[in-house]
Amino acid sequence: MKTSTLIAIVALNVTTSSHAQSFFRSQAPVDFGKNEFKTNCAACHGLEGKGNGPIVDLMKKPPPDLTLLARSNKGILPIEKIYNTIAGDVPQAHGGRDMPVWGNIYKIEAANYYMDVPYDAEAYVRAKILYLTEYISRLQR
Image (cartoon, rainbow, N blue to C red; front, side, top):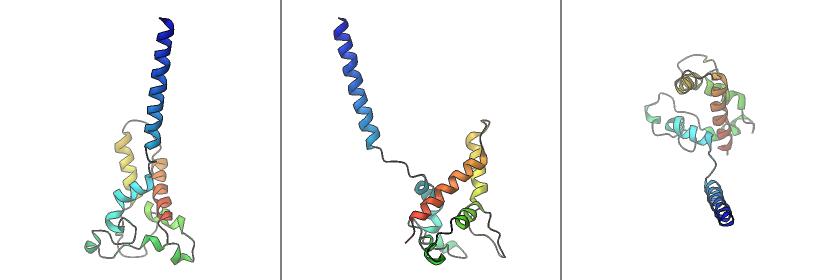
């Protein structure tokens, strides 16, 4: 009786383990930057980042082609400028700012998500902006 119980437990464990492993192997890794881009940026910049999103016609000034940022900067991606633009830290010389200040939006998003749980708002905002910055680096042509 004890031997048959032990064999059943081992067989169940092996079967469950192999199913779990195949489940996790079949799951594609989450691309946080791409997801964030599709959710918050593609409406203006387009899914490929070329500045041809579905609401471009409603904008006063068309958004830039994000795939050409490195090319238009002597082949060097201006990471700090991208980060600061998304965060809303780039001072505007004159006129309005068509792009939302995502740094503030992410702070509000974090507050709504975490509510009374202690969290680091700056780390939350930094992670979101770095996801986007890294994804934009992959869009370069």
